[in-house]
Image (cartoon, rainbow, N blue to C red; front, side):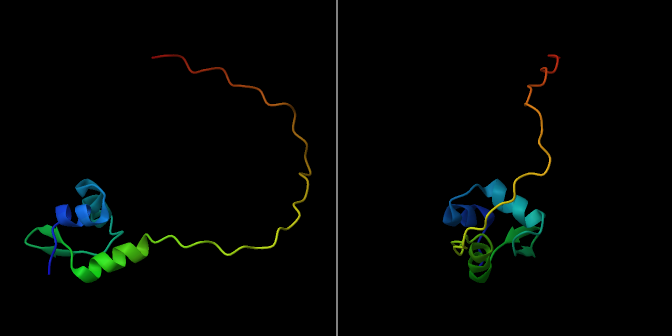
Length: 83
């Protein structure tokens, strides 16, 4: 089954613009049919896998070396002039 960008956006709980932009930038898989983006069920599964976030492995804490160069006190910059 082929899905239109609006359907994909609803399934992924995002905007239609985001879906089209990701496809345009070739960040997500799609099919170009009839001059518009179309997405298969396999495309949807792959999009979910691409943006899946997994927990990081816990690593033992390593001691950090002290900075070798000491910097002076921080000072705020002067604001830019208003245009």
